[in-house]
Length: 247
Image (tube, rainbow, N blue to C red; front, top):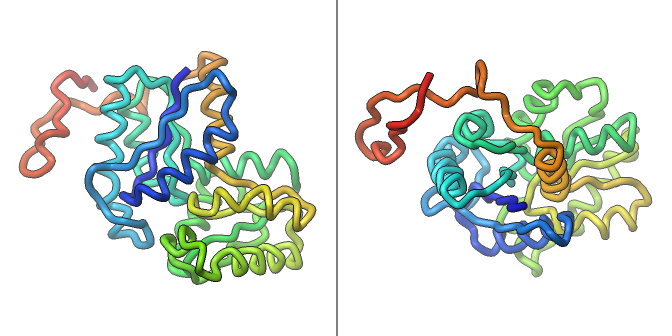
């Protein structure tokens, strides 16, 4: 089985750390490859950057289809391009926010989310609602830490994340969801330190992707996730034309 982890930003160091987290969660027999786009923002902390990240993400999905990849994980907590990726991929595509919320709900009745910047909390709340977890989610808290600072051992990021996790628990949560793929390597240490489940979406999504492949469950080709219709695409996006697609 081959699961591809796609970091939608172009930070290669973050891609490496995400790959380590995914491989730790995967079965020994599963091949896990971690990649980032050839184009796009260095990190995703705004709607603008999220929009610019999607073409490069879809480029990697298309390459994965040619490489025979069985399933994909989108390793950004905003789950950017998830619906579009499901239209392109023959195997399942899992977003890490979606996976983390489900995993937290299996081990606790109430969970809180600790994410990066305040400006990203709106997207996290939207996804809580979209995936049906509003009754279970106590709050979404921001650390006011930039995504790329999580990759800097000299920053105070790790201490601040731990402090915000404690605040979430003080607010009534029974588990914590880490709201950024760049926090993946903090998961196990925080869980041991806090004594509660701390959920990393990268590991959860990787495990779920494996399970869906083993269950022979693929994204339905009928209705909303059917392959997109073939039509002319011009300008810089011309390479994304899908000559073989059907409605």
